[in-house]
Amino acid sequence: MKFRVFLDTNVFIYSFEFPDSNSSKIIELLDMGKIEAITSERVLKEVTHYFEKEHSLILARKFRKFILELCIVIMKNNVIQEIESLKGIIKDKDIEQLAVTIKYGIKFLISFDRDFEGIEEYTTPKEFLKLIKLKTRDTEF
Image (cartoon, rainbow, N blue to C red):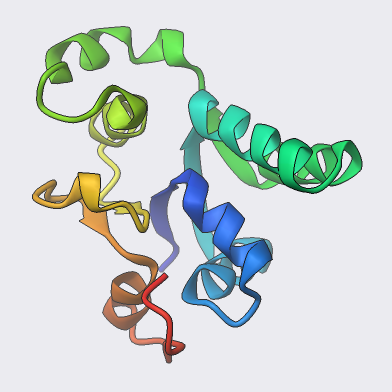
């Protein structure tokens, strides 16, 4: 069974910056087609911006292409109603991610962001790998 998950910005970043992380293992699952990943327009922009700022425009474009080819990217204008209903429940920087997760009935919002604690769908990369009975790495992320 292929799990449908929402991948947050930090999963993409940690997978690159820490190749022996659980985030890296999740990106490997995505690359092998073992999970179906949904993400948001905001995540796409954040990942692209991070890699352009911290590495290079070339790497930023490669990550953008990777995300566009392997993930379903939901545009902000598709979740405006959900965003409005979540205002005040979670920080604005995380609201689009949660809005997409809720609107599309995604069971797992994979992130290493404590701002999602208390949200039913939230799981860390390590927790998700344990849940699907895969060996985890030492890192939490």
